[in-house]
Amino acid sequence: MNKNLLRPEIQAFIQSHSNADTASVSLGKSPFPGVAPRELAQQLSGRQKAEQKLPLWYQTPGIYYPPALNLEQASSEATASYKGSLVSGQLLVDLTGGFGVDDFFFSRTIQAVHYCEQDPQLAEIASHNFKRLGVENIIVHTGDGMAQLPVIAGENDRIDWIYLDPSRRKKDRTRVFRLEDYQPRVAEILPELFRASPNVLLKTSPLLDLTQGAKALGNVREVHVIGIRNEVKELIWWLQEGYDGDADRIALDLFYGNSPFRFALQEEQRSEVAFSRPLNYLYEPNASLLKAGAFKTVGARYGLGKLHRHTHLYTSETLIPFPGRVFKIVQTLAYKPGKLPFHKANVSVRNFPENVSRIRKRNRIKDGGNTYLFFIKSLDDSLQVLACEPVKVI
Image 1 (cartoon, rainbow, N blue to C red):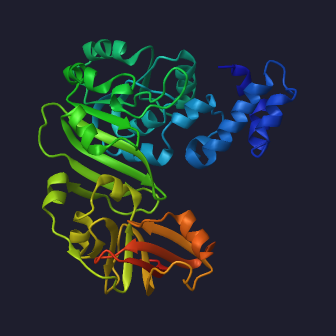
Image 2 (cartoon, rainbow, N blue to C red):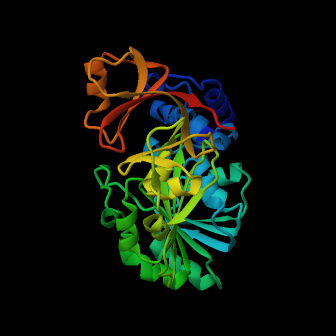
């Protein structure tokens, strides 16, 4: 951490050059003694990325930004705020502190947060930023979190929560996706974690299979599937010592503000969904609902008809609020390649033998416009095209 970057004149430069070409800055000559061009470029680039991902950090003077990879791996402000709402109590230990975004929000609902980070430079940056953000209840520990845990446990009567965001990259920085390839290996260290605290909050890749993850981890009380703008961003697992019941799955999209959709896998297995031909309205569940696997439950809860067992789209005669996109069905057509009366539209496929690219090419459909075409397999296994217009549900 180069503290020269915190000098008032350099901070003023960073504030006033929000749209600078960071590549040019990195390759050019630094206008400030004691600051290398790449260091200045790192601060400019970090602040640019923070504008959307971490608006509070962006708006706070004197924030020091880490290397790009550390900022990329950090939680967004939206997901971190949600995680903060999941915990309460006197003490939380974060074993993999990173840039410290999660800990900032944990500190709002937990009396004391112990931040552990083995990278001393990153720990120093996080400690500086906590002070700039006005946080006083985060204790920073430099070193391996698993080595710090017994020390913290010995000095405190109770640890209410342990938070863990394992590394999902190899030493060469390539990504890993299997739970057993994470560092640390969560399933192996769980007994040690439970000796220190009855509750573990775990963040994993959104690509992890929920059923396989639950089987590998055990003790899963809840798994939260967090989406933003219809893209699944994080899976958050609440592991509770001794818990062997059916885990609740909670799906939500933070951008659209839908209420969390909570269900259990047993409910999904027991649910009976009605099937239907396309009616007046079409419902497309958001990505977090689909990732959570609420294929039958969502139809049963909202009283919707499903178009096909493997076509995860739903329909109704009357319009209802729904956690996903809603469309008015204007026209239902049998699929006849090359004979569709559309020249420009937004194209989606569901349980259909052709991909979007091939459909566009065969039917000469350009992208865009206010028409949405859903190419589907219908209830009788015939191929259909649903021409729709988006509906805003209030």
